[in-house]
Length: 338
Ligand SMILES: *Cc1c(COP(=O)(O)O)cnc(C)c1O
Image (cartoon, rainbow, N blue to C red; front, side, top):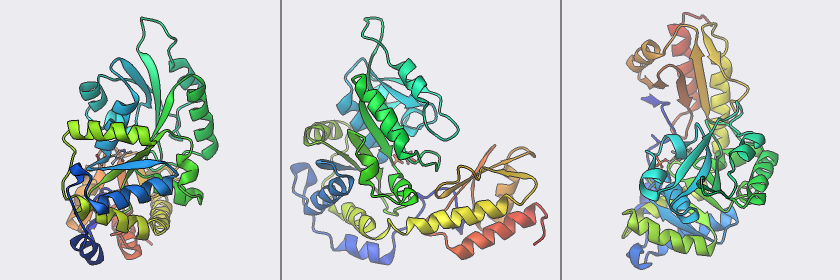
């Protein structure tokens, strides 16, 4: 199977499994797991933050961050298409009593500064208290430029808000920009990273921030049912991917670029090449939805995420050969020769 549905579908390699099997462990709820601590220290260090906390998922680390920063009746400003608004089940509102203030995203994934400014509410008893700006990088595979991050977060700070980054794929952004991930993280009070996306770990996310924030995060993680015991077994995979799988993200970006450029030659397809920054290729078609294409590809052992638009994601279990096979299969489907 060539599975292009997401970069979450990667399977742990033999070497990663061996590292996991040998991990030193303890009860992490008691603070006894040396491997979890090592992962947290390493992640904090890489992001230039004081401390970090390991959790089961990015949904959980984002929710913990929102609950640390915002009290009941506060609100967070967030992109209309952001994961923390759209794809986390409304957790901030349901479990945190935090009101989302969604704002339209621009074509490049950013939220326009004037729209951020317009959404920040004055101190008035009619309004929720605007407390946090939440950005996402990468967002839909797009990289937000550093000068934008600086402008948006300083605008928020000037108005008394704190800044959180949903950095599920922040290493893709760093590799694309050719900077240390710290150069992105430095604008934020907290950053959540996913180990289980392009980096290839089977489970896990890390929230990084100040010591005070992470102390508070331990309480929320426990309350959310996220305290894990001998979690060193999965944390070991996290350390492994931070050590081995960051620079190689460039390969995924190269594969996605090749895929995008070739598919753009198919007249029936509209490929967004302008914003093909990292490992995701998005397709639209004048012919409607992609269900038939998806079924055709599945018979050829190729899986894509297809509805009205289609998404093809490159990751460490997709080789250049696989990309070429996929290009050929899609050209066959559209009866494009060459
Ligand atoms: C995947 C993802 C998350 C976290 O998802 P989990 O599946 O809960 O780990 C958060 N934000 C973005 C942008 C994501 O893509």
